[in-house]
Amino acid sequence: MEHQEETLLKVEHLCQYFKMGPGRELKAVDDVSFDIKKGEVFGLVGESGCGKTTTGRSIIKLYDITSGNVYFKGQRICAGTRSYKEAIRAARTAYREKIAALDKQKKEEIEQGADRAQAEELNKKLRTEAEEQYRTAVLENRKLIASAKHDQKFCDKDHAEKVVASFKEEREKALAACSSDEERKKVEKDYKTRLRVASHERIVNRIQMIFQDPIASLNPRMTVRDIIAEGLIIHGIKDKDYIDEKVYNILEKVGLVREHAGRYPHEFSGGQRQRIGIARSVIMEPELIIADEPVSALDVSIQAQVINLLNDLRSELGITVLFIAHDLSVVKYFSDRIGVMYFGKMVELAPSDELFAHPLHPYTRSLLSAIPLPDPQYEKQRRRITYNPLAEHDYSVEGPTMREITPGHFIYCNGAEFEKYKEELGL
Ligand SMILES: Nc1ncnc2c1ncn2[C@@H]1O[C@H](COP(=O)(O)OP(=O)(O)OP(=O)(O)O)[C@@H](O)[C@H]1O
Ligand SMILES: [Mg+2]
Image 1: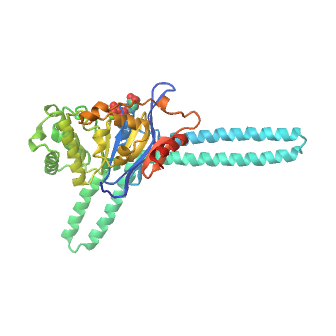
Image 2: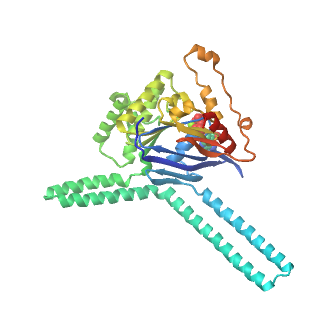
């Protein structure tokens, strides 16, 4: 599918660890990197518990991420500090080791009859150099920590300030172009309304998530109208007629009707509830929608309807989608690129067609072997491949990293495996 090559979301070494009691951590997402281009559908697949939802929730800032960065439209919206703290610790250890080695060297030189004063002098000079290096490393990483903390906390404020500043500029220009007092009054009134909305503007509002469980994510005490309009109201919009009009429009867009606005979530079917969830996220005019398994809880016929709806909204409103699913068949026709996750790690990332034509990682192959086809002959022969990481990989000598095997096709492997995959592809 066609899309511009502008990067909308960039996830860089994202880590989200959960504390599981003293000294224990669960690495729900561990060093995951990918980017999503504007207008693209990026599919994220993997088995239950591999960290897909956690990735989505981290991107919309429901957590303070452990480490890594997330950039949206070029602005850093999430930033973790763990990697910088570790770098400081590593610099401290390296410094201590260096000092010990220098002292040992000095002692040995003196024992071997070197001039004591000269050895002391040299030792002092090298110690100062090592200390200088250590100090620089600490200072640099402290700066990175401070800036990460700032961005994690204040990215919305910074964004709102930028928006307000751009409105001010527009206002000046509009005022200069006015010829009568009446025109000027109109400009000022417009400006005040826009300013009120802008001061509530949060950059993460441009990202909306459709949650995995449609019933748990809709407040049972609120009517559909209130659920869908909630975001607008929080955004400082007070005009009741404007809100109603928008809610009715969105309801129609997602295949529901006006009359549904006064009902409560329990009065709907699963597919309809999912549509309410979609309406609630679309009304905020997001640029990116994170659809977290929006169809897993639904009947196959309704699955197709909801996917078609998302597809229509995408072409109509130009929304970019991060589509989360646990099964590859769902994302196959809908995604431009697919990332496969396994136990918190991204193990393979490739354009959709390429992934289906040349799956390389054994886990991806096992996922593919699980897809049934409506062909009795094929089904008779279909063999389920099971993935056993301990039997598949030997990472005792060299650990795995993400490597690009053909343009845009990345695979998590070590050097030896990389050569093997290359051979398989005939490269
Ligand atoms: N808030 C939390 N605190 C502690 N552990 C968590 C938390 N949220 C998720 N986890 C754990 O992190 C891991 C990843 O969970 P996540 O919900 O991201 O999986 P998932 O890939 O979305 O799975 P599914 O397909 O079942 O939705 C799981 O082991 C889960 O138990
Ligand atoms: Mg999930």
